[in-house]
Image: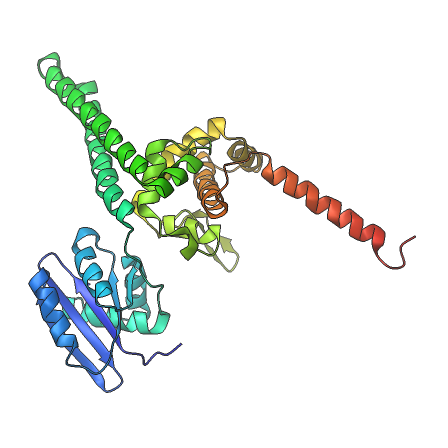
Length: 340
């Protein structure tokens, strides 16, 4: 790991970009507008230095993506990291300041030390899906709020909430139709969605949400990385003789984690793999929400397996693999030298 490699840290806000360029000869800072003209000014500023730095910025949604796309298009390696990673890194450095310029320098130092994974822009199909699933989530949240108000509304105002719910239902149907059109227009995406919906508990909208959010499956080495990306891995708490409750880490993509919640609830009723896991955990006395979290994690593993192997979900796969392993173990014992 080269901790002296040139690194550009960017603190992104709605209106501006505070940047810090770390070189072996020293640090340089500047501020640019978070606009296309500002991106060009940033490129001209970087051209003054005889290096091509790696770039790191926090995941701040729609504010960070335009400059990330621009710099990636300039041929630079770009990393987008979880803001919590920067937060905890600042604590390790005993950082007491909190300014945009300081944060840019902090991000650059974090990237130099940890060399985060390179970010890849979404595919054209993902770029079409992402705004649709994002808006659908917002509309669905509005419908939940409207339904809650309706349940306690007097008769004089209930009709307004019913009208609002009808409107939101029409929007949800329209969005589902548009999502389906995008899936149908991209054969690979359509095939991936069809594979995902073979997993009991995963419907078309959930499949589309997953495909819109997760990185290319070839960029992930194993199912644990996808579970960590979603933030559904367990977080243990233990110090000396004191052991706290194991919780879901939640250090991952919030929308993906949210998209797995209701499918996990459904899978607990209809997915034999998830049901078997739930039974084992219940017998160990685990709480209900711990079981739900484990179901979400197992779904992430199943999603990875289906997409990585390009095969439909097989409820008997794990049992057959266990039988094969036992058969091989028995055969090795029988063939071991010195055995009668």
